[in-house]
Image (cartoon, rainbow, N blue to C red; front, side, top):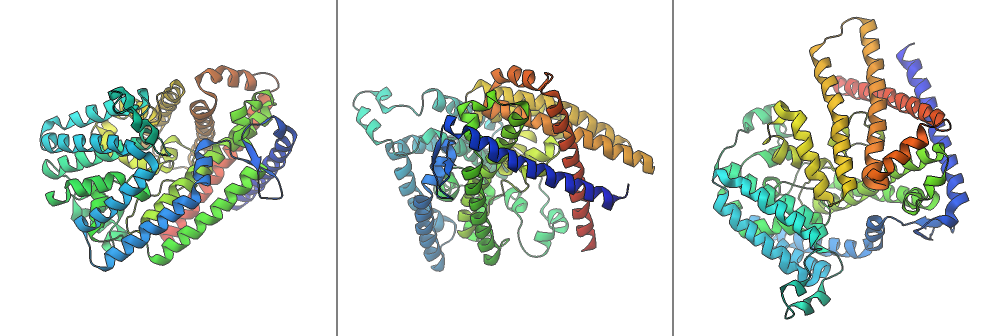
Length: 521
């Protein structure tokens, strides 16, 4: 079969699959909407709107206030830059505006943020130039856990004289946002340590290899890897970095080096035209989300538990829909805040550079899902732990940390450890195939087919791990297996596997087309 014929058949199958998914999703949403939680009156064709996800509901409900803060922040920043303010000057301006924003969000709990941040700064200055820099991890992990255990520390814990402050805790729980602050505190500490202790980054070699940097622009990697002078590691710039309003609530996560570098010179990688187009694409994506939540009640099925009483086929459709809803939700959240940051001259990594439906192995999935967190983990955990030399052990430490960072729940630890188990065969297969060179056309064909089968298995594993971690919990594994391994569920399981196989083959063609496009330029 020629490549063009195969591609045509794959596209026909994919279109048929999505048409069926849309048709069946509309049916089950219409048939069961009276049993679902979290539906509210919508604005599209008088349909109900699925706002059952608390994170999405809060973001959507506060979008007007966020955009007002966005406008004020940008107006102040633009005005100050016109007067030639740089590093310390801009950090003071942004710090003042961000503190007002934080006071609205957290009220008196801003005291906790400032106290912990100040203690971390002192620890960095004491230990940052020594081999005891690992104490930063102990300090930050302790607060990461204690913040959750004590639910943000009621002021009454410190005596009745402080109890009245519990009436002024703001509109948003500070210890939820503080998880991102902890990542920034570690970033500041280690960037300071490497600036004074060791830096193996070869700037000249990087510029020769990087198309952005060789053309006179500065890429994010260069901003992150090159060391800064000690004057940039001041308390004002540090505090501004921790609570910088555009990235404070949800990221994307930017390293201290990259942030402080852009205080002097605003990002030039993205032109104003590109940034505006980026914002317009975000508006289009928001309309897509609104259409999805008005017509398909995927998350409401999961929240209500109603999907447990559906057929295996409908369970698959709801599970697949929930994962796509989650992807689009985070896509919108992270792109909104990244757009805000770009408008103000600070480039942060793109968190969702690739669609969830265009990832067929675990490594590429985690590079493209919360990608800025992945970059952070690689820089501050994976490489210090030994990198590729100890990869099989590293993933267990890293994913356990990721689970605890998200929340102290057994289902998240189950998700982390399931992901690690699924990672092992993929790493072994990759290591084996890298040592083998397939030259014959038959060998290449077999290799491609086996890779497609492996991709189908990986996508299935990813679905299971994420549903366990974020929807059904570890106790739901037995229920999920019983549904799909019984007589009624086996045809659905087979069809699901064939669909993922076809999807993987289609991704191969997309990857081939991209490579041809790059070589043709």
